Length: 513
Length: 79
View 1: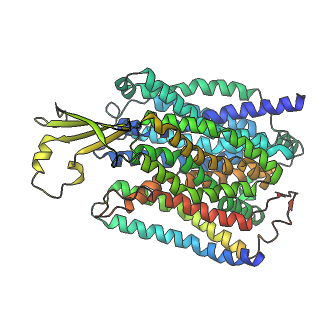
View 2: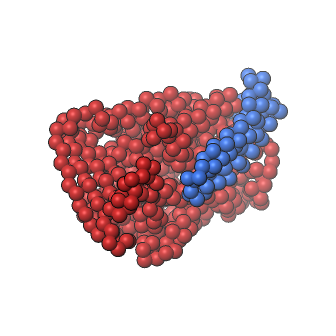
View 3: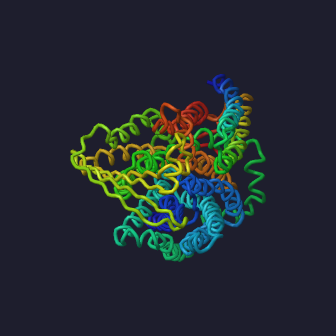
Protein backbone atom coordinates (compact mmCIF):
# COMPACT_ATOMS: atom_id res chain seq x y z
CA UNK A 1 0.00 0.00 0.00
CA UNK A 2 1.50 3.36 -1.03
CA UNK A 3 1.97 6.23 1.44
CA UNK A 4 -0.70 8.20 -0.41
CA UNK A 5 -3.21 5.35 -0.12
CA UNK A 6 -2.37 4.87 3.57
CA UNK A 7 -2.88 8.59 4.08
CA UNK A 8 -6.33 8.63 2.53
CA UNK A 9 -7.49 5.69 4.65
CA UNK A 10 -6.30 7.51 7.77
CA UNK A 11 -8.27 10.56 6.67
CA UNK A 12 -11.37 8.45 5.97
CA UNK A 13 -11.02 6.63 9.30
CA UNK A 14 -10.67 9.80 11.37
CA UNK A 15 -13.50 11.58 9.57
CA UNK A 16 -15.85 8.60 9.52
CA UNK A 17 -15.51 7.68 13.20
CA UNK A 18 -16.38 11.22 14.27
CA UNK A 19 -19.31 11.48 11.87
CA UNK A 20 -20.57 8.05 12.93
CA UNK A 21 -20.55 9.18 16.57
CA UNK A 22 -22.42 12.35 15.66
CA UNK A 23 -25.10 10.29 13.91
CA UNK A 24 -25.22 7.89 16.87
CA UNK A 25 -25.78 10.85 19.21
CA UNK A 26 -28.49 12.24 17.00
CA UNK A 27 -30.33 8.94 16.52
CA UNK A 28 -30.56 7.72 20.09
CA UNK A 29 -32.89 10.60 20.83
CA UNK A 30 -35.17 9.53 17.96
CA UNK A 31 -34.92 5.83 18.79
CA UNK A 32 -35.82 6.50 22.43
CA UNK A 33 -38.55 9.02 21.48
CA UNK A 34 -41.31 7.16 23.30
CA UNK A 35 -39.47 6.92 26.63
CA UNK A 36 -38.19 10.50 26.34
CA UNK A 37 -41.75 11.61 25.80
CA UNK A 38 -42.80 9.88 29.03
CA UNK A 39 -39.90 11.30 31.05
CA UNK A 40 -39.72 14.86 29.76
CA UNK A 41 -43.00 15.71 28.01
CA UNK A 42 -45.84 14.61 30.30
CA UNK A 43 -49.29 14.61 28.81
CA UNK A 44 -52.58 12.89 29.48
CA UNK A 45 -52.84 12.10 25.78
CA UNK A 46 -50.12 9.70 24.60
CA UNK A 47 -50.43 10.73 20.95
CA UNK A 48 -49.93 14.37 21.86
CA UNK A 49 -46.96 13.39 23.97
CA UNK A 50 -45.49 11.39 21.12
CA UNK A 51 -46.03 14.24 18.71
CA UNK A 52 -44.39 16.62 21.17
CA UNK A 53 -41.31 14.45 21.01
CA UNK A 54 -41.51 14.24 17.26
CA UNK A 55 -41.77 18.02 17.17
CA UNK A 56 -38.59 18.17 19.20
CA UNK A 57 -37.14 15.64 16.76
CA UNK A 58 -38.14 17.89 13.90
CA UNK A 59 -36.76 20.93 15.72
CA UNK A 60 -33.44 19.14 15.75
CA UNK A 61 -33.68 18.83 12.00
CA UNK A 62 -34.98 22.33 11.43
CA UNK A 63 -31.94 23.94 13.05
CA UNK A 64 -29.64 21.83 10.91
CA UNK A 65 -29.71 24.30 8.00
CA UNK A 66 -28.72 27.05 10.44
CA UNK A 67 -25.83 24.87 11.63
CA UNK A 68 -24.86 24.42 7.99
CA UNK A 69 -24.67 28.20 7.54
CA UNK A 70 -22.84 28.92 10.81
CA UNK A 71 -20.25 26.16 10.58
CA UNK A 72 -20.06 26.14 6.78
CA UNK A 73 -18.99 29.79 6.90
CA UNK A 74 -16.43 29.02 9.61
CA UNK A 75 -15.13 26.04 7.66
CA UNK A 76 -14.60 28.14 4.54
CA UNK A 77 -12.82 30.87 6.51
CA UNK A 78 -10.72 29.13 9.20
CA UNK A 79 -10.57 25.61 7.76
CA UNK A 80 -12.34 22.26 7.74
CA UNK A 81 -10.40 20.51 10.50
CA UNK A 82 -11.01 22.92 13.38
CA UNK A 83 -14.64 23.47 12.43
CA UNK A 84 -15.64 19.83 12.50
CA UNK A 85 -13.76 19.39 15.78
CA UNK A 86 -16.00 22.05 17.35
CA UNK A 87 -19.17 20.43 16.03
CA UNK A 88 -18.09 17.07 17.46
CA UNK A 89 -17.57 18.54 20.94
CA UNK A 90 -20.92 20.39 20.90
CA UNK A 91 -22.72 17.23 19.84
CA UNK A 92 -21.02 15.01 22.44
CA UNK A 93 -21.63 17.38 25.34
CA UNK A 94 -25.29 17.95 24.41
CA UNK A 95 -25.94 14.21 24.20
CA UNK A 96 -24.20 13.52 27.49
CA UNK A 97 -26.19 16.27 29.24
CA UNK A 98 -29.53 14.90 27.95
CA UNK A 99 -28.63 11.69 29.81
CA UNK A 100 -28.03 13.69 33.01
CA UNK A 101 -31.27 15.72 33.16
CA UNK A 102 -33.68 14.66 35.92
CA UNK A 103 -37.16 13.71 34.70
CA UNK A 104 -40.06 16.18 34.69
CA UNK A 105 -41.36 14.83 38.03
CA UNK A 106 -38.24 16.12 39.78
CA UNK A 107 -37.29 19.01 37.52
CA UNK A 108 -40.07 21.01 35.87
CA UNK A 109 -37.72 22.85 33.51
CA UNK A 110 -36.62 19.52 32.00
CA UNK A 111 -38.67 19.88 28.75
CA UNK A 112 -37.12 23.30 28.02
CA UNK A 113 -33.58 22.11 28.78
CA UNK A 114 -34.01 18.99 26.64
CA UNK A 115 -35.32 21.12 23.79
CA UNK A 116 -32.29 23.46 23.98
CA UNK A 117 -29.88 20.51 24.01
CA UNK A 118 -31.69 18.94 21.09
CA UNK A 119 -31.38 22.20 19.16
CA UNK A 120 -27.65 22.22 19.89
CA UNK A 121 -27.42 18.67 18.56
CA UNK A 122 -29.10 19.78 15.34
CA UNK A 123 -26.80 22.78 15.04
CA UNK A 124 -23.71 20.58 15.47
CA UNK A 125 -24.92 18.01 12.95
CA UNK A 126 -25.55 20.82 10.47
CA UNK A 127 -21.88 21.68 10.61
CA UNK A 128 -20.40 18.20 10.82
CA UNK A 129 -21.39 16.42 7.63
CA UNK A 130 -20.31 19.09 5.14
CA UNK A 131 -16.96 19.32 6.89
CA UNK A 132 -16.30 15.59 6.88
CA UNK A 133 -17.42 15.11 3.25
CA UNK A 134 -15.39 18.10 2.06
CA UNK A 135 -12.36 17.03 4.08
CA UNK A 136 -12.32 13.51 2.60
CA UNK A 137 -13.12 14.71 -0.94
CA UNK A 138 -10.30 17.25 -0.85
CA UNK A 139 -7.85 14.50 0.10
CA UNK A 140 -9.08 12.16 -2.67
CA UNK A 141 -7.91 11.92 -6.27
CA UNK A 142 -10.69 13.28 -8.53
CA UNK A 143 -11.38 10.00 -10.30
CA UNK A 144 -12.00 8.18 -6.97
CA UNK A 145 -14.00 10.80 -5.06
CA UNK A 146 -17.21 8.81 -5.25
CA UNK A 147 -15.55 5.72 -3.79
CA UNK A 148 -13.68 7.48 -0.97
CA UNK A 149 -16.52 9.78 0.10
CA UNK A 150 -18.95 6.87 0.09
CA UNK A 151 -17.27 5.67 3.30
CA UNK A 152 -18.49 8.85 4.97
CA UNK A 153 -21.94 8.01 3.59
CA UNK A 154 -21.97 4.68 5.43
CA UNK A 155 -21.71 6.46 8.79
CA UNK A 156 -25.28 7.71 8.76
CA UNK A 157 -26.61 4.16 8.49
CA UNK A 158 -23.95 2.64 10.75
CA UNK A 159 -24.70 5.35 13.32
CA UNK A 160 -28.32 4.19 13.37
CA UNK A 161 -27.17 0.58 13.59
CA UNK A 162 -24.84 1.33 16.53
CA UNK A 163 -27.56 3.32 18.31
CA UNK A 164 -30.03 0.45 17.92
CA UNK A 165 -27.39 -2.09 19.01
CA UNK A 166 -26.55 -0.09 22.16
CA UNK A 167 -30.23 0.38 23.02
CA UNK A 168 -31.11 -3.30 22.43
CA UNK A 169 -28.07 -4.48 24.43
CA UNK A 170 -28.98 -2.18 27.31
CA UNK A 171 -32.58 -3.41 27.19
CA UNK A 172 -31.42 -7.03 27.24
CA UNK A 173 -28.96 -6.52 30.11
CA UNK A 174 -31.44 -4.71 32.34
CA UNK A 175 -34.87 -5.58 33.67
CA UNK A 176 -37.63 -3.64 31.82
CA UNK A 177 -38.42 -1.63 34.98
CA UNK A 178 -34.75 -0.66 35.44
CA UNK A 179 -34.39 0.32 31.77
CA UNK A 180 -37.51 2.44 32.01
CA UNK A 181 -36.33 4.00 35.27
CA UNK A 182 -32.66 4.82 34.59
CA UNK A 183 -31.23 2.40 31.97
CA UNK A 184 -32.39 4.53 29.01
CA UNK A 185 -29.84 7.16 30.11
CA UNK A 186 -26.86 4.85 29.49
CA UNK A 187 -26.76 5.24 25.66
CA UNK A 188 -26.66 9.04 26.16
CA UNK A 189 -23.91 8.88 28.80
CA UNK A 190 -21.81 6.54 26.66
CA UNK A 191 -21.52 9.29 24.08
CA UNK A 192 -18.95 11.28 26.08
CA UNK A 193 -16.46 8.39 25.95
CA UNK A 194 -16.92 7.93 22.18
CA UNK A 195 -16.57 11.63 21.51
CA UNK A 196 -13.37 11.93 23.59
CA UNK A 197 -11.78 9.11 21.58
CA UNK A 198 -12.81 10.71 18.30
CA UNK A 199 -11.58 14.19 19.30
CA UNK A 200 -8.15 12.74 20.11
CA UNK A 201 -8.01 11.03 16.68
CA UNK A 202 -9.13 14.16 14.82
CA UNK A 203 -6.69 16.44 16.67
CA UNK A 204 -3.84 14.52 15.02
CA UNK A 205 -5.12 15.16 11.48
CA UNK A 206 -3.82 17.87 9.15
CA UNK A 207 -5.87 20.48 7.32
CA UNK A 208 -7.23 19.58 3.85
CA UNK A 209 -4.51 20.09 1.20
CA UNK A 210 -6.78 22.02 -1.19
CA UNK A 211 -7.89 24.42 1.55
CA UNK A 212 -4.31 24.78 2.84
CA UNK A 213 -2.99 25.78 -0.58
CA UNK A 214 -5.91 28.18 -1.07
CA UNK A 215 -5.09 29.75 2.29
CA UNK A 216 -1.38 29.95 1.49
CA UNK A 217 -2.22 31.80 -1.73
CA UNK A 218 -4.59 34.13 0.16
CA UNK A 219 -7.52 33.04 -2.00
CA UNK A 220 -9.96 31.93 0.68
CA UNK A 221 -13.38 33.53 0.72
CA UNK A 222 -13.89 36.61 2.89
CA UNK A 223 -17.67 36.27 2.94
CA UNK A 224 -18.70 32.70 2.02
CA UNK A 225 -22.40 33.35 2.69
CA UNK A 226 -22.54 36.24 0.23
CA UNK A 227 -20.52 34.37 -2.39
CA UNK A 228 -22.63 31.23 -1.99
CA UNK A 229 -26.10 32.71 -1.96
CA UNK A 230 -25.69 36.30 -3.13
CA UNK A 231 -24.24 35.52 -6.56
CA UNK A 232 -26.59 34.12 -9.19
CA UNK A 233 -23.93 31.85 -10.66
CA UNK A 234 -23.60 29.92 -7.41
CA UNK A 235 -27.16 30.33 -6.11
CA UNK A 236 -28.60 28.63 -9.18
CA UNK A 237 -26.38 25.61 -8.47
CA UNK A 238 -27.42 25.59 -4.79
CA UNK A 239 -31.08 25.54 -5.86
CA UNK A 240 -30.40 22.85 -8.44
CA UNK A 241 -28.60 20.73 -5.83
CA UNK A 242 -31.58 21.10 -3.48
CA UNK A 243 -34.49 20.52 -5.86
CA UNK A 244 -32.74 18.15 -8.26
CA UNK A 245 -30.92 15.92 -5.78
CA UNK A 246 -30.96 16.41 -2.00
CA UNK A 247 -34.72 16.94 -1.62
CA UNK A 248 -35.47 13.51 -3.11
CA UNK A 249 -32.46 11.90 -1.49
CA UNK A 250 -33.60 13.20 1.92
CA UNK A 251 -37.11 11.76 1.73
CA UNK A 252 -35.90 8.41 0.35
CA UNK A 253 -33.35 8.16 3.15
CA UNK A 254 -35.72 9.05 5.99
CA UNK A 255 -38.53 6.89 4.64
CA UNK A 256 -36.23 3.88 4.29
CA UNK A 257 -34.66 4.17 7.69
CA UNK A 258 -36.99 6.10 9.99
CA UNK A 259 -40.50 6.06 8.61
CA UNK A 260 -40.14 2.30 8.20
CA UNK A 261 -39.27 2.07 11.90
CA UNK A 262 -42.18 4.31 12.97
CA UNK A 263 -44.49 2.33 10.68
CA UNK A 264 -43.46 -1.01 12.19
CA UNK A 265 -43.78 0.23 15.76
CA UNK A 266 -46.85 2.47 15.57
CA UNK A 267 -48.91 1.12 12.65
CA UNK A 268 -48.00 -2.58 12.70
CA UNK A 269 -47.62 -2.57 16.55
CA UNK A 270 -44.57 -4.84 16.30
CA UNK A 271 -42.67 -5.30 19.57
CA UNK A 272 -39.81 -2.77 19.65
CA UNK A 273 -36.85 -5.12 20.22
CA UNK A 274 -38.03 -7.40 17.43
CA UNK A 275 -38.58 -4.52 15.00
CA UNK A 276 -35.27 -2.86 15.85
CA UNK A 277 -33.36 -6.15 15.52
CA UNK A 278 -34.77 -6.74 12.03
CA UNK A 279 -34.01 -3.15 11.02
CA UNK A 280 -30.47 -3.51 12.40
CA UNK A 281 -29.81 -6.69 10.37
CA UNK A 282 -31.17 -5.11 7.17
CA UNK A 283 -29.07 -1.98 7.70
CA UNK A 284 -25.93 -4.03 8.18
CA UNK A 285 -26.62 -6.10 5.05
CA UNK A 286 -27.27 -3.03 2.90
CA UNK A 287 -24.39 -0.85 4.14
CA UNK A 288 -21.74 -2.19 1.67
CA UNK A 289 -23.92 -0.89 -1.17
CA UNK A 290 -23.14 2.71 -0.18
CA UNK A 291 -19.53 2.00 -1.15
CA UNK A 292 -20.60 0.05 -4.24
CA UNK A 293 -22.75 2.88 -5.60
CA UNK A 294 -20.09 5.44 -4.65
CA UNK A 295 -17.54 3.40 -6.62
CA UNK A 296 -19.97 2.94 -9.53
CA UNK A 297 -20.59 6.69 -9.66
CA UNK A 298 -16.88 7.20 -10.41
CA UNK A 299 -17.33 4.96 -13.45
CA UNK A 300 -20.71 5.98 -14.92
CA UNK A 301 -21.47 9.34 -13.25
CA UNK A 302 -23.54 10.24 -10.19
CA UNK A 303 -26.77 11.50 -11.74
CA UNK A 304 -28.57 8.40 -12.97
CA UNK A 305 -27.68 6.24 -9.95
CA UNK A 306 -29.29 8.77 -7.62
CA UNK A 307 -32.30 9.32 -9.87
CA UNK A 308 -32.90 5.61 -10.36
CA UNK A 309 -32.96 5.22 -6.56
CA UNK A 310 -35.65 7.91 -6.35
CA UNK A 311 -37.71 6.41 -9.18
CA UNK A 312 -37.61 2.91 -7.68
CA UNK A 313 -38.66 4.37 -4.33
CA UNK A 314 -41.67 6.10 -5.87
CA UNK A 315 -42.73 2.88 -7.64
CA UNK A 316 -42.06 0.41 -4.83
CA UNK A 317 -42.96 2.20 -1.58
CA UNK A 318 -46.65 1.32 -1.53
CA UNK A 319 -46.19 -2.41 -2.36
CA UNK A 320 -43.39 -2.73 0.22
CA UNK A 321 -45.20 -0.97 3.07
CA UNK A 322 -48.42 -2.75 2.14
CA UNK A 323 -46.61 -6.10 2.46
CA UNK A 324 -45.34 -5.11 5.92
CA UNK A 325 -48.86 -4.16 6.95
CA UNK A 326 -50.39 -7.38 5.58
CA UNK A 327 -47.77 -9.57 7.27
CA UNK A 328 -48.55 -8.02 10.66
CA UNK A 329 -52.34 -8.02 10.16
CA UNK A 330 -53.70 -10.58 12.62
CA UNK A 331 -57.38 -10.18 11.71
CA UNK A 332 -57.35 -13.20 9.39
CA UNK A 333 -55.28 -15.44 11.64
CA UNK A 334 -56.74 -17.98 14.02
CA UNK A 335 -56.32 -17.50 17.77
CA UNK A 336 -55.43 -20.84 19.43
CA UNK A 337 -55.10 -19.58 22.98
CA UNK A 338 -56.47 -16.54 24.75
CA UNK A 339 -56.24 -15.52 28.38
CA UNK A 340 -56.78 -12.30 30.21
CA UNK A 341 -56.39 -10.72 33.60
CA UNK A 342 -57.71 -7.64 35.32
CA UNK A 343 -55.57 -5.57 37.65
CA UNK A 344 -56.97 -2.74 39.77
CA UNK A 345 -54.54 -0.29 41.39
CA UNK A 346 -55.19 2.98 43.28
CA UNK A 347 -55.02 6.12 41.12
CA UNK A 348 -52.13 8.15 42.55
CA UNK A 349 -53.42 11.36 40.96
CA UNK A 350 -57.08 11.23 42.17
CA UNK A 351 -57.90 10.13 45.72
CA UNK A 352 -60.57 7.44 45.89
CA UNK A 353 -60.23 6.50 42.25
CA UNK A 354 -58.72 3.33 40.76
CA UNK A 355 -56.92 2.48 37.55
CA UNK A 356 -58.26 -0.64 35.86
CA UNK A 357 -55.83 -2.53 33.62
CA UNK A 358 -57.18 -5.32 31.44
CA UNK A 359 -54.50 -7.46 29.79
CA UNK A 360 -55.36 -10.00 27.09
CA UNK A 361 -52.75 -12.42 25.76
CA UNK A 362 -53.52 -13.96 22.37
CA UNK A 363 -51.56 -16.77 20.76
CA UNK A 364 -52.01 -17.36 17.03
CA UNK A 365 -51.75 -20.56 15.01
CA UNK A 366 -48.67 -19.27 13.15
CA UNK A 367 -46.71 -18.87 16.43
CA UNK A 368 -47.21 -15.12 16.78
CA UNK A 369 -48.52 -13.59 19.98
CA UNK A 370 -50.20 -10.33 20.90
CA UNK A 371 -50.66 -8.51 24.20
CA UNK A 372 -53.53 -6.03 24.30
CA UNK A 373 -53.62 -3.75 27.32
CA UNK A 374 -56.66 -1.58 28.05
CA UNK A 375 -56.30 0.93 30.85
CA UNK A 376 -58.87 3.37 32.22
CA UNK A 377 -59.85 5.34 35.29
CA UNK A 378 -62.79 3.71 37.09
CA UNK A 379 -64.34 7.02 38.11
CA UNK A 380 -64.11 8.57 34.65
CA UNK A 381 -65.44 5.37 33.13
CA UNK A 382 -68.49 5.48 35.43
CA UNK A 383 -69.04 9.18 34.72
CA UNK A 384 -68.99 8.65 30.98
CA UNK A 385 -70.87 5.37 30.89
CA UNK A 386 -74.12 7.01 29.81
CA UNK A 387 -72.54 9.23 27.23
CA UNK A 388 -72.31 7.98 23.65
CA UNK A 389 -69.68 10.58 22.68
CA UNK A 390 -66.82 9.90 25.07
CA UNK A 391 -64.27 12.76 24.91
CA UNK A 392 -60.73 11.72 23.94
CA UNK A 393 -59.09 12.20 27.37
CA UNK A 394 -61.60 9.78 28.96
CA UNK A 395 -61.34 7.06 26.35
CA UNK A 396 -59.56 3.94 27.59
CA UNK A 397 -55.90 3.80 26.63
CA UNK A 398 -55.40 0.72 24.44
CA UNK A 399 -51.95 -0.55 23.51
CA UNK A 400 -51.17 -3.56 21.35
CA UNK A 401 -47.80 -5.25 21.18
CA UNK A 402 -47.34 -7.89 18.53
CA UNK A 403 -44.49 -10.39 18.62
CA UNK A 404 -44.37 -12.11 15.25
CA UNK A 405 -43.23 -15.71 14.78
CA UNK A 406 -39.62 -16.27 13.64
CA UNK A 407 -40.89 -17.29 10.18
CA UNK A 408 -41.62 -13.63 9.47
CA UNK A 409 -38.10 -12.41 10.26
CA UNK A 410 -36.50 -12.82 6.82
CA UNK A 411 -39.57 -11.50 5.01
CA UNK A 412 -39.40 -8.27 7.01
CA UNK A 413 -35.60 -8.08 6.76
CA UNK A 414 -35.83 -8.47 2.96
CA UNK A 415 -38.43 -5.68 2.71
CA UNK A 416 -36.38 -3.31 4.88
CA UNK A 417 -33.22 -4.28 2.95
CA UNK A 418 -34.85 -3.18 -0.32
CA UNK A 419 -35.86 0.14 1.29
CA UNK A 420 -32.27 0.69 2.49
CA UNK A 421 -30.93 -0.33 -0.93
CA UNK A 422 -32.81 2.64 -2.41
CA UNK A 423 -31.16 4.74 0.30
CA UNK A 424 -27.70 3.53 -0.74
CA UNK A 425 -28.42 4.47 -4.37
CA UNK A 426 -29.43 8.03 -3.59
CA UNK A 427 -27.02 8.59 -0.71
CA UNK A 428 -23.84 6.75 -1.75
CA UNK A 429 -22.80 9.18 -4.52
CA UNK A 430 -24.27 12.40 -3.08
CA UNK A 431 -21.22 13.67 -1.15
CA UNK A 432 -19.01 13.52 -4.25
CA UNK A 433 -21.82 15.04 -6.33
CA UNK A 434 -22.22 18.02 -3.97
CA UNK A 435 -18.49 18.56 -3.47
CA UNK A 436 -17.92 18.70 -7.24
CA UNK A 437 -20.77 21.14 -7.78
CA UNK A 438 -19.06 23.99 -5.90
CA UNK A 439 -15.60 25.63 -5.93
CA UNK A 440 -13.18 24.92 -3.04
CA UNK A 441 -13.33 28.35 -1.42
CA UNK A 442 -17.08 28.26 -0.70
CA UNK A 443 -17.61 24.51 -0.85
CA UNK A 444 -18.32 23.88 2.85
CA UNK A 445 -21.05 26.56 2.98
CA UNK A 446 -22.53 25.91 -0.47
CA UNK A 447 -22.88 22.14 -0.15
CA UNK A 448 -23.99 22.11 3.50
CA UNK A 449 -27.13 24.20 3.05
CA UNK A 450 -28.86 22.20 0.27
CA UNK A 451 -27.78 18.97 1.98
CA UNK A 452 -29.34 19.94 5.30
CA UNK A 453 -32.50 21.49 3.82
CA UNK A 454 -32.97 18.35 1.74
CA UNK A 455 -32.30 16.00 4.62
CA UNK A 456 -33.30 18.11 7.60
CA UNK A 457 -36.44 19.81 6.34
CA UNK A 458 -37.73 17.48 3.61
CA UNK A 459 -36.33 14.26 5.06
CA UNK A 460 -36.52 14.98 8.78
CA UNK A 461 -40.20 15.78 8.58
CA UNK A 462 -41.14 12.49 6.84
CA UNK A 463 -42.33 10.72 10.05
CA UNK A 464 -44.02 13.89 11.32
CA UNK A 465 -45.89 14.74 8.10
CA UNK A 466 -46.57 11.03 7.53
CA UNK A 467 -48.48 10.85 10.83
CA UNK A 468 -50.33 14.08 10.02
CA UNK A 469 -51.44 12.74 6.62
CA UNK A 470 -52.67 9.52 8.24
CA UNK A 471 -54.63 11.73 10.68
CA UNK A 472 -56.11 13.64 7.74
CA UNK A 473 -57.20 10.38 6.12
CA UNK A 474 -59.38 9.51 9.13
CA UNK A 475 -63.11 9.63 8.45
CA UNK A 476 -66.24 8.52 10.33
CA UNK A 477 -66.30 5.37 8.20
CA UNK A 478 -62.58 4.73 8.68
CA UNK A 479 -61.66 6.12 12.12
CA UNK A 480 -58.12 4.72 12.08
CA UNK A 481 -57.24 6.30 8.73
CA UNK A 482 -55.39 4.71 5.83
CA UNK A 483 -52.15 3.11 7.03
CA UNK A 484 -50.29 3.92 3.79
CA UNK A 485 -51.50 7.52 3.46
CA UNK A 486 -48.29 8.86 5.03
CA UNK A 487 -46.30 7.67 2.01
CA UNK A 488 -47.82 10.27 -0.32
CA UNK A 489 -45.45 12.91 1.01
CA UNK A 490 -42.11 11.14 0.31
CA UNK A 491 -43.43 9.73 -2.98
CA UNK A 492 -44.54 13.17 -4.17
CA UNK A 493 -41.29 14.88 -3.20
CA UNK A 494 -39.14 12.11 -4.73
CA UNK A 495 -41.17 12.23 -7.97
CA UNK A 496 -40.74 16.01 -8.36
CA UNK A 497 -37.03 15.72 -7.55
CA UNK A 498 -36.64 12.94 -10.13
CA UNK A 499 -38.16 15.12 -12.87
CA UNK A 500 -36.01 18.14 -11.95
CA UNK A 501 -32.87 16.02 -11.69
CA UNK A 502 -33.54 14.21 -14.99
CA UNK A 503 -34.15 17.43 -16.92
CA UNK A 504 -31.66 19.87 -15.41
CA UNK A 505 -28.73 17.93 -13.89
CA UNK A 506 -25.62 17.06 -15.87
CA UNK A 507 -23.98 13.66 -15.54
CA UNK A 508 -20.57 15.29 -15.92
CA UNK A 509 -18.42 17.12 -13.36
CA UNK A 510 -18.91 20.91 -13.40
CA UNK A 511 -15.88 23.04 -14.33
CA UNK A 512 -14.67 25.57 -11.77
CA UNK A 513 -12.37 28.48 -12.51
CA UNK B 1 -34.42 19.95 -24.28
CA UNK B 2 -33.84 23.64 -23.58
CA UNK B 3 -37.48 24.47 -24.28
CA UNK B 4 -38.58 21.70 -21.88
CA UNK B 5 -36.29 23.24 -19.24
CA UNK B 6 -37.79 26.66 -19.92
CA UNK B 7 -41.47 25.67 -19.82
CA UNK B 8 -41.01 23.44 -16.80
CA UNK B 9 -39.63 26.59 -15.15
CA UNK B 10 -43.18 27.99 -15.23
CA UNK B 11 -44.41 24.83 -13.48
CA UNK B 12 -41.83 25.27 -10.70
CA UNK B 13 -42.76 28.93 -10.31
CA UNK B 14 -46.38 27.87 -9.78
CA UNK B 15 -45.55 24.83 -7.65
CA UNK B 16 -43.94 26.89 -4.84
CA UNK B 17 -46.98 29.09 -4.08
CA UNK B 18 -49.35 26.17 -4.77
CA UNK B 19 -47.61 24.03 -2.14
CA UNK B 20 -47.83 26.79 0.45
CA UNK B 21 -51.47 27.51 -0.42
CA UNK B 22 -52.26 23.80 -0.04
CA UNK B 23 -50.53 23.69 3.36
CA UNK B 24 -52.40 26.80 4.57
CA UNK B 25 -55.70 25.34 3.34
CA UNK B 26 -55.06 22.03 5.13
CA UNK B 27 -53.97 23.88 8.27
CA UNK B 28 -57.11 26.03 8.26
CA UNK B 29 -59.32 22.95 7.86
CA UNK B 30 -57.58 21.18 10.70
CA UNK B 31 -57.30 24.16 13.03
CA UNK B 32 -60.86 25.38 12.46
CA UNK B 33 -62.10 22.36 14.37
CA UNK B 34 -63.01 23.09 18.02
CA UNK B 35 -61.03 19.95 18.90
CA UNK B 36 -57.78 21.55 17.62
CA UNK B 37 -55.14 21.62 20.33
CA UNK B 38 -52.17 23.87 20.94
CA UNK B 39 -49.93 21.02 19.75
CA UNK B 40 -51.65 21.06 16.37
CA UNK B 41 -51.34 24.83 16.07
CA UNK B 42 -47.64 24.54 16.84
CA UNK B 43 -47.08 21.74 14.34
CA UNK B 44 -48.79 23.55 11.48
CA UNK B 45 -47.07 26.86 12.27
CA UNK B 46 -43.67 25.12 12.23
CA UNK B 47 -44.41 23.38 8.93
CA UNK B 48 -45.63 26.54 7.18
CA UNK B 49 -42.78 28.62 8.62
CA UNK B 50 -40.20 26.13 7.41
CA UNK B 51 -41.63 25.47 3.96
CA UNK B 52 -42.25 29.12 3.04
CA UNK B 53 -38.58 29.99 2.31
CA UNK B 54 -38.21 26.66 0.52
CA UNK B 55 -41.21 27.53 -1.67
CA UNK B 56 -39.65 30.93 -2.41
CA UNK B 57 -36.49 29.04 -3.42
CA UNK B 58 -38.60 26.93 -5.77
CA UNK B 59 -40.00 30.08 -7.41
CA UNK B 60 -36.46 31.48 -7.88
CA UNK B 61 -35.37 28.14 -9.34
CA UNK B 62 -38.31 28.27 -11.76
CA UNK B 63 -37.45 31.86 -12.66
CA UNK B 64 -33.87 30.90 -13.47
CA UNK B 65 -35.09 27.97 -15.56
CA UNK B 66 -37.56 30.23 -17.39
CA UNK B 67 -34.69 32.61 -18.15
CA UNK B 68 -32.59 29.77 -19.65
CA UNK B 69 -30.00 29.87 -16.83
CA UNK B 70 -29.76 26.07 -16.83
CA UNK B 71 -29.47 25.66 -20.60
CA UNK B 72 -25.69 25.41 -20.63
CA UNK B 73 -25.12 23.08 -17.68
CA UNK B 74 -23.71 20.36 -19.99
CA UNK B 75 -21.35 22.87 -21.66
CA UNK B 76 -20.07 24.02 -18.26
CA UNK B 77 -19.22 20.44 -17.27
CA UNK B 78 -16.34 18.14 -18.02
CA UNK B 79 -16.32 14.36 -18.56
